[in-house]
Image: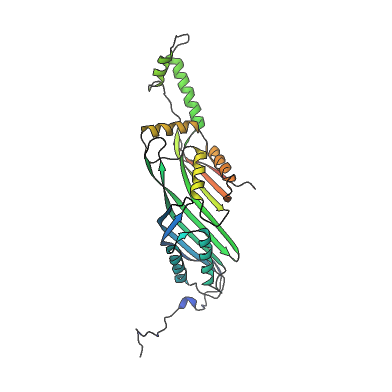
Length: 307
């Protein structure tokens, strides 16, 4: 007699059985886009919780094995991310647990964690402040004693084209020459009043929202020094996007853009110089994209750590 609810009944496990069609190794097997909580300290001591999308993978290097134990990976991730703040050391421990749970099947483990980290940013001049969400991707792997981790985020800023600024200045000069004839007596107040009119400023340089995608390999295994990293990059660019602004803040932002005219090449070099000087960064790769208002395409530059 077959008893369906017998407590001693063994459930079939076809994934662990050898299969005629197996006979092959696989680079990665696992789950992606698992919905998990994450608590994250970006290096400023302000631990924030967010919803994350997580990928957990191991290789399959036993040719005759049909599959891995995916539920083991899920439960390990769930326990690790629910129990405390995410750290580099904690990720390494979790990857080691992946391999221990797949002894004989796998010798290489990988974890990806994607979420947004909220940071409150003050306005440039007023007392206002608002939230900025920085997308974070953590990609880590462990094989034997070789552990690697990369952290990726985006810094969004404004870029004003130097060439467009020069052309605009020339138009303003030409307009001044047409409005005020040679030899005409001018006083300071007349010129100031003219500069404050739409007729005085007849051209403006084009500017655009721009994105620097920063991928770093941290030098240590403590907390992620992300806020310091983002702060120094935004300071080097001079024009990070703002949140809640009053007119005084908008004017300060316009002034910052005028003081930081830059092509994508300029922005990439500024970031490169900043990261080269950061002892917390062992390696990095930068992709800068200026989402042009002049063109329907982007101006792009890449930079990496000097070898």
